[in-house]
Length: 174
Ligand SMILES: CC(C)(COP(=O)(O)OP(=O)(O)OC[C@H]1O[C@@H](n2cnc3c(N)ncnc32)[C@H](O)[C@@H]1OP(=O)(O)O)[C@@H](O)C(=O)NCCC(=O)NCCS
Image (cartoon, rainbow, N blue to C red; front, side, top):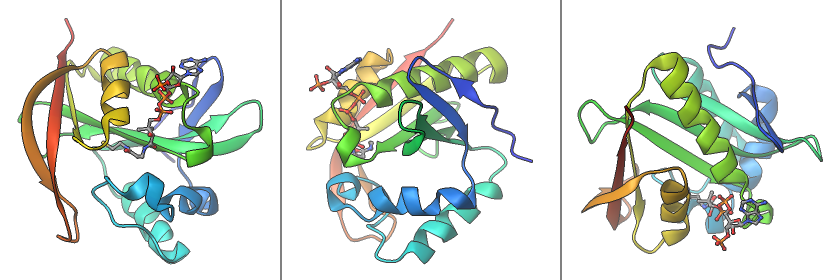
């Protein structure tokens, strides 16, 4: 059984990811408009998405949800919170959304709920995230969730193919 609970927001249901979500996740994991500035590479085969979903099951510390749009009963994105590998004592948030559902506020709505859950139930007070400077849309989500710009740095795609200059954001809750 998954550790992630179901969380309801105004327009979304956030629920634990399952292998049945592979097709939906592949629809954006395979879309370069979505993956261009992500750590992982663009998936060319659904088996890569299945491997990624399977890898989340074994991760005790990272919490992963898919975002189901209530109106269409459709999985339109995914988000996570887990210990940061870059900033000690911080928890990092991550998210992505199917391209057809950008510009509607869904990601911010979901991530606010995940941060709230992390704070209330997991006692997470220090949150961070980072985005490639050429991907400012992601920074807007961070700002709307209450994170503030902290410093510049860089990150490299997991396959080593590209390194991006990045903006790092942080937030400390009381
Ligand atoms: C990052 C990403 C999820 C942001 O998507 P997004 O649609 O810009 O973000 P939100 O869902 O929060 O939507 C915010 C936008 O919806 C608009 N909006 C429309 N209706 C809205 C509503 N009812 N409520 C709130 N906002 C609404 C906002 O004005 C805002 O538009 P703007 O950015 O043009 O000002 C998306 O660009 C993405 O998946 N990118 C690729 C993956 C990625 O970069 N992940 C992060 C890596 S660091």
